[in-house]
Length: 271
Image (tube, rainbow, N blue to C red; front, side, top):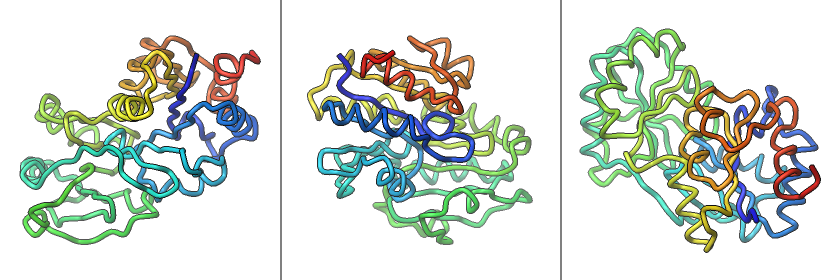
């Protein structure tokens, strides 16, 4: 019996217009009404999800959200932090030093701001066009507070430039940090213990829910860990081959109400 559903947003719950279809919305509301925990799981901060949580009806007492790709688990109504794994300043400095040689603009993020150190680059950052809810603050890494808690470090520019220039960076840090491509234009570096699977596991433990009672739905590289963790991992029809390969089930695409179809089949027993 599924007691917790964790759902990725872009390419999964959201269609190409970044909207939640009525069928998806109704399926999730029905699941919630039956006592199932419905949890959005994303790389975004909580502020970037408030409108979706309100639209779907997932910001009541007892609702939860997983943000920063699993690095932060919060109560959806109050923002209270239940679980958090961050990078410290020493780790930030290490990554920044290596970043100096790749000519790609870097940002680092905590719960309140996106920090942008100056650096040698001819590439234009696309992140301001993606991140609309947190303020951008110029701050050199050396000037960051010693006790700063960094949720993630990221590089965001045109896909071909990003792929070419960050390959060595990804290789250098792949064993000591979590390095993921969450979008074609976005590379993220987080604490080694951070992924969507660990975030969901932390929430499930808090709620007393067993692993086999968890269902996850996703489509991209940063969803692999949660698809692998779940008792029932569901890949979208538009998911990457890697995600489909480890999933227990492949549903329809995000344009075809794939989330609703899976929830109806495995949770609501309507399929």
